[in-house]
Length: 77
Image 1 (cartoon, one colour):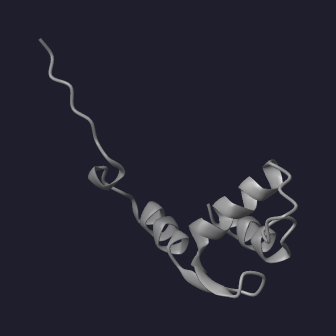
Image 2 (cartoon, rainbow, N blue to C red):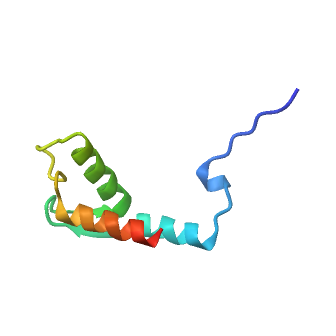
């Protein structure tokens, strides 16, 4: 009987590029629209959700900063 093992993200060895990407995702910045400090991964998640769901009530909907940060992150990857 084969044993099943599950790995979490932290168990998987990362290359230097992946470490850099993870570090970038956890960088904080000040968001003018929300008047608070957020990590990049939170900004990108909220930006994508607001625009995919067309949530016009969200401050992240059509946010130029969120779009810039998402494009900048995509270019690094």
